[in-house]
Each structure stands twice: as C-alpha cells, then as structure tokens.
Amino acid sequence: MSPPSTATLFSYSLALLFLLLSFSTPTNASNITLILAKYPQFSTFNHYLTATHLASQINRRQTITVLALDNTAMSSLLSRHFSLYTLKNVLSLHILVDYFGAKKLHRISKGSTLTSTMFQATGSASGTSGYVNITNLKGGKVGFGAEDNEGKLDATFVKSIKEIPYNISIIQISHPLDSTEAEAPTAAPSELNLTDIMSKQGCKAFAGLLQASGADETFNQNIDAGLTVFCPTDKVVSDFMPKYRNLTAPKKKSLLLYHGIPVYMNMQMLKTNTGTMNTLATDGANKFDFTVDNNQEVVSLDTTVVTAKITGIVKDEEPLMVLKINKVLLPKEMYKPVEPASGPSADAPADSTPADDQTLDHDGVGGLGDRRMGMVMVVLSLCIGMLLI
Image 1 (cartoon, rainbow, N blue to C red):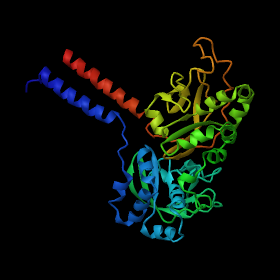
Image 2: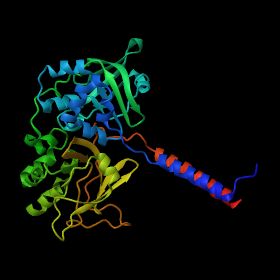
Image 3: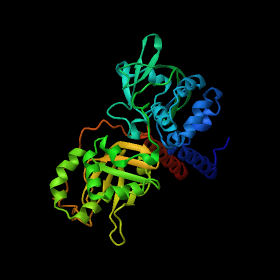
C-alpha cells in the first residue's frame, strides 16, 4: 500500500485539529428544566424552580449541584404554605455552588464538609446559615443538613440523577432541608432594601454612607432595570474615612455612585465580559469608568488609581448583584492616576483584605482550557512536521 499523499495527510491533520478545538473551549449548555423534564417524579420541583426564577440562575452557572426533591418530598414542603418568595429561599438552600457527584459525596475529606448555597448569595442568610453540612454516615449513607439547624441532618442521599463533570450534578435527597432563616417570611423583591441587604453582610458602613449622602436613591432607582454594586467592607471604609471626610458633598456622592454599574452582572459575566464599565457616576465628559480584569479566577477592578479585588458575594438575585471588594474605588476624575513606575498611589487606601466567609463561584475547569490548547498546539506542530517531510 502506497503512503498517503501530502494532501491526504493535510486533510486528516486539519480534521483532527478542528476536532480538538471543538473540545478546547468549555461550555455551559446545561438546562435544568430540560434535564428534569425527563423525570416525571420531579415535576413539582421542576415547576417551582421555574416559578421562582431559580432555573435561569442555575443555567447561568458553570459549577452547580442541585439537591432535587421528588413530588412526595415537595408535597411535604408545600404543605407549610410558604409564600413564593420564602419558597425561593428554601429551594435555593438546595442548590450548592460547588460540584458534588456521587463519587465525591462518598469521598469527602475528614468525612464532613460545609458548602455554600445559592441561599447564601440572596443576602438573607446571616453568618453560616446559608451553608449545608454534608457528612458521610455509617452504612455508606450520606447526610445533608442546613448549618443553622443545630447540626441536624434532615436528609440523606438517594441517587444520582444526572452528572456532567464538573459542570452540573443533580442528585436526589430524601427530604427537604430545614432552616429557620430560609423559612423566615420574605418580602417581595420590590420591597427589598439595598442598604439593609448590605448592612447584614459586612457592608454596613458603606450602606450608611449611601444613606447619609442621598446616593442610595440613585442606586434604588436602578434596581428594577438591573444593578451591580461593589461595596467596600466595613474595615476598608473605616480606614478610608479620614480621606472621605475631606471631600465636598458632591464629590462624596460621585465617589459612592462610582461603586455601582447600571446593569446586572454576576461573577461569571464579570469573568467573561472584561473591559471598561460605565458607572452610576458617569456624566458626559466625566467618564467615571473602570476596567474589569480577570486573572486566574480573581476578578479585579482597575480605576488607574487603585486596583480592587472582588472578595465575596453579598447578594446574587437578578436584577440585583452586590459584591464585596477590598478597596474603596477611587476615580481618576477625582484622584491622580498611579504612574506605572511610581508604585502605589498616596491617595489609595490601605490594601486591607478582611477575612471573608463568603464563597465565590468556581467554574470547576481551572487549567483545563490551557491543557487542551496545549494539546492542540502539539498536534498542530506534528501536522506541520508531517507536511514538511
């Protein structure tokens, strides 16, 4: 048999290259509604994920575990007659922002772990009440319980329904998880107060500045259309107060408005839509914008005066996103930009990053794209070498 021609080798190599490229970019095409639609025993659970808008929030995330309840378990939950908004909090406690397949559940380090949930990101969960305890029990069982439920494990693992490592895992648990905070009466979204939300999650000082300056009115007016707020934590604001007091009232308001963008952007959006962002302080020629950068899963905001890192999530419930940052954002319209060779600006507040128990989203594919791209480059080199023989 004669060896293949150069043209044939090129065709095979090109086809292989395109095949590898098709696998080099991770995608999040999972649709929780369509997946659960194949299982009639979860129809009630599926319906309420849609009714509470949790389904769309699940679909936007790249790493998620859904603790699904069958129709019998949902009946016991619905018999408590929660409002739809309270039910959303309860169901969001059943959505873990990490990946747990069946194998991982049975191989938990030290036999027990705490993991964050979407309820923790609603702004209604104080302390660790938005966390779920997962514990390996005797006989190969795995127990689940809300952290604010006195250590009780209300449910056990039943079976895996669907796993797409490390994107989405849907597992059935035996009973709903009980949580005093999740089950507390919840106001409708239009009645929620932004400053109250921030005050409960380590941003009380910043919330107070918004109210004192009147800037909170502008923030509240933008919630319905979409709003993302970057709030410096209490320690950061406290360190900055001597400089803040020296500002005029208009400059104080501009500085505060600089911490909001008039569009909803969750962490995944910020990771993939980096670039210049207009803020609530933007006014004609006064741009008052900053740049969003993403470096190895750390999202930072660069104003040219300071660079602040996002350290936690206060609330993630479309159309409102509130994120903690480790510095006060200083606009170049009010402060002198840092020269590249001059080091940190004298105007910049101390880089004080407080301890933070908030858990950020993880897309579970760290380094995977780089490794696959490396494979592509190796194959491409081989293809070129074959053509040159």
